[in-house]
Length: 186
Image (cartoon, rainbow, N blue to C red; front, side, top):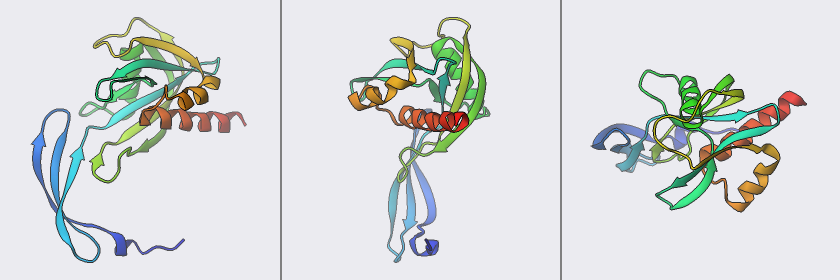
């Protein structure tokens, strides 16, 4: 399919910072759209995140039952967190698995990197597949989950259908891991 990218490319003339703290940066971007109209567009910048899909030899995935206050909603999620300055995303994923669950990853590989809210939000997420993990202690740091369990992969579709799994990183991670694992076994 042929496209002419220049016909639909927005031109950025600059960005003005409106708000900044350790969690979020909000800017107004001076843009011109195809056809010449020029205006300010909001842009939200969030730190990069790394998320791990930890699977074991019994075809189970390590998941955390968490409450998300913004939506007052519970759900199963994968371990993950924000990438520290100077840290690579794979290191973050391994660190977060151990901090949040008490398990230390054995083998880790990159699955996919994506933007969950393209358009006005810059929030790069890197997903990793972890094959095997060793229990080395209790979770450390903040209490992030009420329950940590190994969930059979066969139960994941029903959990998604019920709405028990609903966050983008977890959904994309589980689908990407399933695809990678089925390609490796087939």
